[in-house]
Amino acid sequence: MALAGKRILLIIGGGIAAYKCLDLIRRLRERGASVRCVMTQAAQQFVTPLAVGALTADRVFTDLFDREDEHDVGHIRLSREADLLVVAPATADLMAKMASGLANDLASTVLMATDKKVLIAPAMNPKMWEHPATRRNRDTLARDGIAFVGPNRGEMAESGEGGEGRMSEPMEIVAAIAKLLDGTAQPLAGKKIVVTSGPTHEPIDPVRYIANRSSGKQGHAIAAALARLGAEVRLVSGPVSIADPQGVTTVKVETARQMMAAVEAELPADAGIFVAAVADWRTDGESGQKLKKVSGEGPPALAMVENPDILATVGHHASRPKLVIGFAAETQNVVENAKAKLSRKGADMIVANDVSADSGVNASGVMGGDRNLVRIVSADGVEDWPEMGKDAVAERLARLIAERLASR
Image (cartoon, rainbow, N blue to C red; front, side):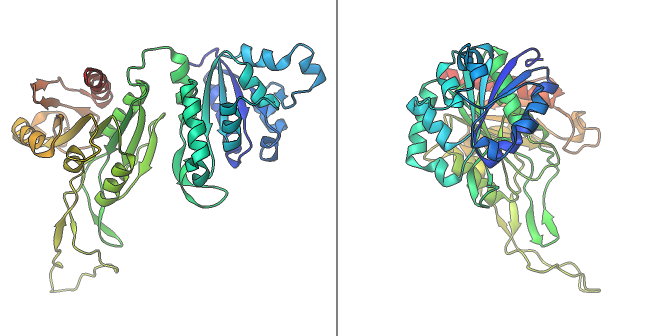
């Protein structure tokens, strides 16, 4: 395991998201890591040193001028004995201190004294995250080599406001820690990649909708594989019953129009991978009440309108990513349909997925299984891949994406 035997120094900042650190400590220790904690004075207003110490099974450090700890320059020892320093939550105040080189308490002094990698998990009100001062500070920290995980989009616990600023979930932070400590090649480090996954649900009335059989398994697997290669992945997911992948920022949507808006909000990006099975049509006006069955009258007529074409929109967008990849789930004429889609949508590559009953991949002849039979269609020709599990398809495609981005 990547974390077995690793020593993590967790610096807990003063925000409501500090409560998540209790679960983070437990998750790290489950994976064989040892955890020591430094708490700011503000952090102690949200969680107690007693609770943190109980979970770390170690002393919690809070005071720069502690006689017992500082007789042997404790802040230097703490900063050097760890394999990685993690700041969570990284508040606007802590980020400002780090960017300015301030060292006026134990946490900031440890961060100044370290010679190890530092990972921060920002958490703050969305307006604070977008404030010009915070933007300057995060740019400075990135240039200094500080690694980031998050923040995510969502509702803020303290204010109820929505936006970007939620601290990443504990397992997302664990994945980011493992990635930093793994030491394997990260060919997609510094690249932002948008991935869509799952189906869309187009409402007919408050209880019925139009959808398809997409499970989201392939799109989620691709997002996770890209993150393992170092990419900053923004996953825009329709309604699925599977867990969010680790190390990925997930934006959840319902309809095609919501997915389109979420994708455009993430541009510019280095690559866009459009795996989602987006409904081609929606009803022209959702009924505000459940459509009732009336004996003898037959089914109601549904007027349909076309949904936005997300792949084509991005393929011809002013902020078009360097690499645009679409998926095509086909039951017949797989390669011919994929070639037509390639030119029509403005994509660089189409991953053509044979979901017919004759393919032998899905015994039931429907989407949602665990294996895929794909062909890679591009201007260079058609590459046939053998039948393999969706995780294997994801790993191979992530490597291909890394190669294509490097060549561009």
